[in-house]
Image 1 (cartoon, chains in turn red, yellow):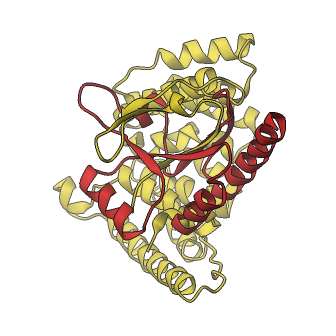
Image 2: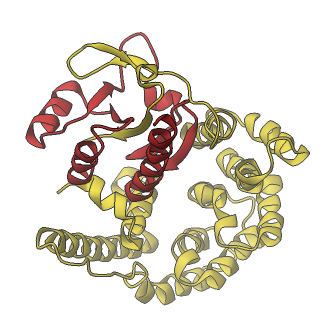
Length: 101
Length: 266
């Protein structure tokens, strides 16, 4: 999915849209993946000392999991299908930009 | 190969591999680990595992080759390596009918026929419930009971599961039977219904040690997903560090559509 995500970020860069990752690898591995695959989005580190993992708080049970949130952080999609998630996100983004113009 | 890509497409084959991997995680007990001589069953199971693994490796290699060539993926029937073994496991179950020795053969039939030949799986499960419900050998059946309603009519499944819930001497089996009876309700019933409340209460009461903790984890996750992460609900904020160690928040993106991607590089 890297190419898909990369081009999605590129395509949507001037719109009210953000692709945010939550990375569950160790930091070294994650940084390598970013460099090697020229990943162009920002990611949270899933694990940090002193608190539970983000994926645990969000009850993620399989990777990848994608959650699409609207401008009010309401959940609009949750699942494992990158293409469906993309379609939902694009439709929402069009609504957000349509409403603000 | 980018395994995320594989998982994303969710081909039946990938689902099958995932299932097989999940199932094999439960039974890392080859004959050597049991510290007893290899039984007839162990030998047959080892033969099946090898055949299955060969088939899987071949399929994964073909999928990988197709992806690299950017060609459509070949299709695989995950039941193909199972079919030739079905008569042999049935034979074992019949040969030892009525004794504990039949139990592993019957469990294998439940495990492996649910997709290919559900009627055979059902017969095997009926036999286990009627002739072997108190057997101490039922341990490996546990997890399969959790998903019986995925392939068997709900009322029939419930009647069968009730037998294991009431009659098994194995705590995990009783726990998985309870899980199998109520989990669908927990997943599907309206949040404000009595059915949901009852299923929630029953399943939340399961001991945390059951099924190596998997039962309680799945129950808590389902409750969390339904009550905090359903479509239309406002997600919690995330305050965390990016990969450069700089703090940022999900709420920094308020007003924007966010595609939140839980990822890992496989």
